[in-house]
Image (cartoon, rainbow, N blue to C red; front, top):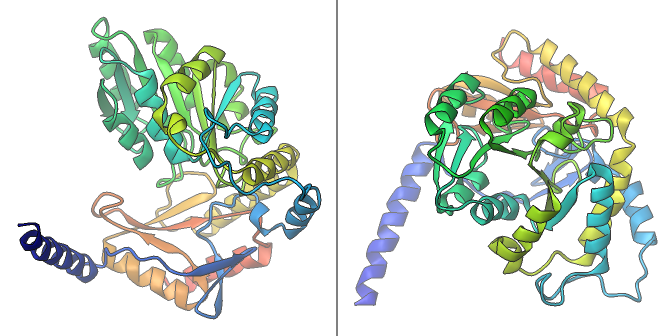
Length: 390
């Protein structure tokens, strides 16, 4: 009987994949090698405007060299071989968490990735009688986390705090605990949450606030600790999730929370308990990098100036947000795909973001600016865009 099922299953997959290809929605893995501000594909170099390497750290071979020279190669660095609760809690993990705690003034707990953190924290801290209210544009990993929760969850219109407040009013007295969930910098629209307004709402309605700083960490704040630090609100946000694979040019994530929540997560967060720990080599590199990030004020300022200039040059287009993530709205998938192909042909590596990733009619080219880009390269990028959109 099983043998009869397979051909149908594959036929269905084949038809659906064919449909995706015809509609220009098929995803594929391209073999790319990045080298600073450039990325090479099939023997050609392109200007990389699709990376999350906001501070240009993955372009810093000087950092890499300094780090590798600091390693004691008589120790084994390459694998934890076990979860943290068994034998995988390396001194590098303990040391990194202690360092992060010294920066944030609160407890910190490492996760293997932002996906692990976002999909594993909310299900651990919420119970049946709680409610989660999340921004409409939160990341897929948060949505997956909410789907695993025993409690109800709803979404408020993107950055629409009067809508959020209506939901908070309706929920009064009906739930044990309410969690408000948002990103600080939104990866698809390049805009920001008004964290101060969310703190005020959280206080007014006795809710808790969870902020995903994936695209804020490293980029904002006097020490690069994120948008929450920049706004002076570290003490007012209950959970801050930061990823380490973007500005920090490493791998993993951490959550900033109070000591009791940290202990609770160690006992209840399945994506922490049942997974092999991050290798010591990554933890040591992360620690090394964050020590650098804290002092990279110049790179942060240069990135903000570059963002301002790039956005000003493309002001005639419909741009979203104000961050180094610069989405340029194109409308339908077709013109979006066409411009992306033209820019790639001209040596600019940008990706079209299309329906169904974003709503229909809101297809966009997303430019990601990083401190690895020179002024000349940024100029080449916007001049190429202007030349192809006259």
